[in-house]
Image (cartoon, rainbow, N blue to C red; front, side):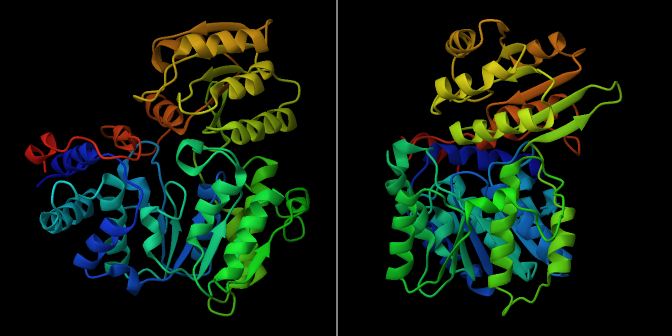
Length: 438
């Protein structure tokens, strides 16, 4: 097997759709020798800020001298971004080897029970981190928490960054129901840390922690507006990142009895944290500035809007906007449109993309003075803003990944693997065709 064949195999797993539940992941992990039992984890769930908080925790523990695994999703351009050790992507050679190993294990499943893409990748990551003898793994949930494939681990700490509206179709229509799914990662006796502000959600998290005899630390939202560690400035933009950092700091301090890390090392880690595509400001040789932000729900776009007003109060950007149709795109457009002088609406390179025409209509109503235009693709739109002083690209991490690839803002060269991010509604698809692929 060569790398392109391994990636094609991962693509073929899409035939098995998306299924919420732990049974198949647990069975696959058992067949792989239960690698999770050899590892220590910090499990991170939440609506927004999961990835940033994971990146901060990883950077802190790496600064402490640990060998740290990092598992996140989606990737921006390359599959290997999902599985990292000390911020180095899993190599193509290791991907080939891991795929070959797990492919043999998949023969133990019927077509009806076959693990999904995310379930397979979850166990691949566990196997890789175990064989590479990671000291700690920062472990991000995919969707929800309770029934997410990542929930087969028992961590040192369970982190719930916040509870906001997103994925209501699968997690419920209220903050309480969403919180119940996220709180599903809480394990008996394992400390819980959260930055959740909503009292409705906190009631659920408190109840779940109490039922499992797990201590609960609630980081007050006011921490978002207080200096970190005596004045530390994060390299990540946005007041919301201060809140993510406060949650990360509280987590590290709570675990200090098992993994000793002092405030100096915490500061080192936070001062060097890197998390592309989240309020990432790129200065090009021409002097042009590009702000890339994967804000993909209402609370995320509110954070982007606040950042634009905080850091660029006198500038109105040209904005390239693309959103997935299963998001609250009308509300997102209403938040962002008034901040731009020009709005270029593009489809996201995904089967789940919202139609540009609908977005354009909402943007025109929200900002009648802006120039609003629709394009067939990101690359069709880009020449029209290539000379603009300030460009913001937002609405979906999928769009950010495409922009980073097309504009050579992503490290490394090679064929994009963004299509692996595609997922279907949590239900079984017709697997008959899959039998000829797997």
